[in-house]
Length: 286
Ligand SMILES: [Zn+2]
Ligand SMILES: [Zn+2]
Image (cartoon, rainbow, N blue to C red):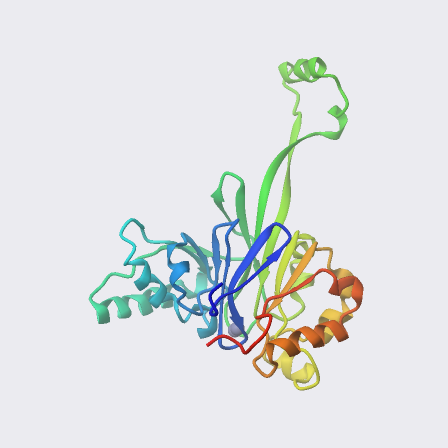
């Protein structure tokens, strides 16, 4: 394990990368093949084809030109796909055009401007839907899901030949169901749980929790449009997720303090499902 990268697991998903509130966030989920934000140009992440930007703040998008530059060294790679809030596409293109000009080196990408509710297909078994988050700049969260075809209830239990017969008669045997796998919501007010309630049902929810105790008041946390641990504790029974990955902690807390505060403050029934995305020991990376 590289000291720069924190690696952990949330159920079936690997969660690897770096996240420190206001400093840098960039998280790779290998099983989905996606990179969530680009606040740090990590060499290994330059090979990833699908990059999701939550918003344009430097700690989430500031390293995109460096990451694309590293990708340029990988000669077998085409430009990656970047999914981002539609309002920031033009500015990102301008910024990358300026950087391309500065370097006399093309920093290409395939843009996917998104707004809340927009969907894209990444693989046969993987889709993504953008949802609204609440921050002072245009911002989005992303919900990754699979769409599976299910036999309708009324046909369940019928023998195979009966189902075959219904099929020949042209009956509508199947309906599609979404399996909500992983949601990513960073830099937002806790209100995202109400405006995008489906994220509470995702198997894994990666959620920011920038502030953890009285060193930052609830009011000050809200004023910056961030989540305070008090607000997660208040809604402890709202999380139906198998795992809740907390990240984007403020550097006013040391990594080991983060763990001890969460252990002391979060009721056991939720704490058992929390994955702390911070180094196990030592200081924050970098
Ligand atoms: Zn941030
Ligand atoms: Zn931000």
